[in-house]
Image 1 (tube, rainbow, N blue to C red):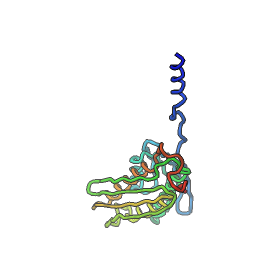
Image 2: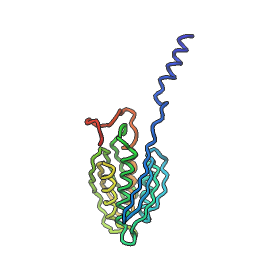
Image 3: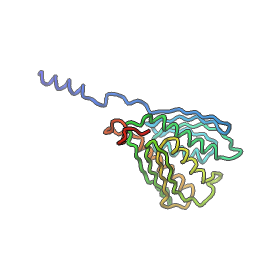
Image 4: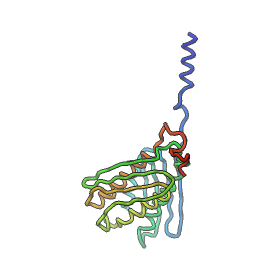
Length: 217
């Protein structure tokens, strides 16, 4: 009887999952003479999105990004759209990157690397990320068309560059095939979503930063 009680007691004490991990969230605001942006991000979410940037195609891409990464994302942006979409698209990428940086904190315990290849009909795109603390963008998307509706396809590069710089990550985007610019860009955002979901996920085998230097900053 005494041994059974002791065994039961030990089982209760040795429960590593009893402590709740801290929430990984961020709320970022940025206001300039060109744009005013409020953004909230929850990494361990369900994929819900409330996106209002004034650029409908960007709203569509960010909604898809949140859904396929299982991030909860809310964006409210006002920009000088009467002039151009550029400032709004780039600044939203910048603020989203800052939110990732804040939500990840010192980046302890994350997988750090993520990779995904996603098709959308004839389009096939790969995204590879390393949340290393160092920023770099390798942009290998060949989009021949200048626009998708009113959206300038060159703005995808500006968004991704701002996102990579502010997050502090390596981001490699490669298009393997594609004809329709909408399909190419959407496959890119979905691939990025799945790669970011993988890279930001907690890895229970990692204590501290996944780096021989001991830091990801």
